[in-house]
Length: 264
Ligand SMILES: [Zn+2]
Ligand SMILES: [Zn+2]
Image (cartoon, rainbow, N blue to C red; front, side, top):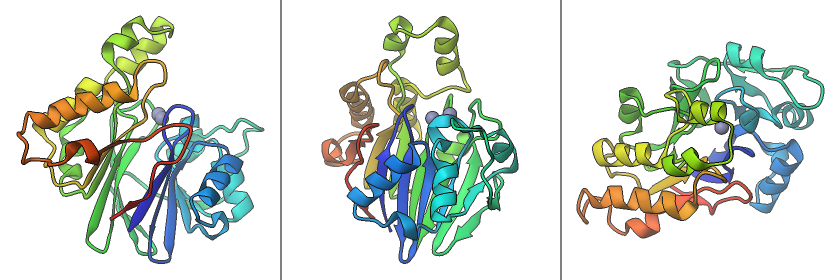
């Protein structure tokens, strides 16, 4: 299995994952054109994608899904409630085809096995996923107000964990957003702060992952170095043998360019 994060953050989330001949995008929150461009740049053929999986209806997760799916004839896997709620910037037409999935119900696309589970966020039916293939498990968890026991349990045993580290609480307090937006982000159905992600690392992370990828960072209320230091400090609490070479293995997913390839 290998994966690459084509973009991460409120300007658009797209993750590409493949195993053997099967390939899928998890969320398609960049434009279809930009997604295809980043895929091509990463060396993968946008016309040979097996499926798109959408976690929830927020624009930063679905923006390009309709155009991409109709142009490249790729099915979109999403829940019924999410499909009904999707609105697109151009003319609001619905995604024409695909499969209906439901939180808590595993599904398979070729050689990729998906395990969706509900997370606390303000979408109509938001879920996170673990993906498994050939004994390798990956956890993809962004867009949640706090880390539930279910999330902590599902992430155990993952070879790569991509987890949100959205904002620094102090930067959010003094940041440029209106009060209502700050309330939303900080609420228990908003986004994870660096502190909450650090708490998960200290209390629930099993240390088994080869990579810990911090994602969905706020441009205005966080800084990649701040998120990284917060995670590294939390890892240090376990002692140096828990997650050796942490400096190399904690990575940051950025909004404006793709990450490196993760070969797992
Ligand atoms: Zn988002
Ligand atoms: Zn969201």
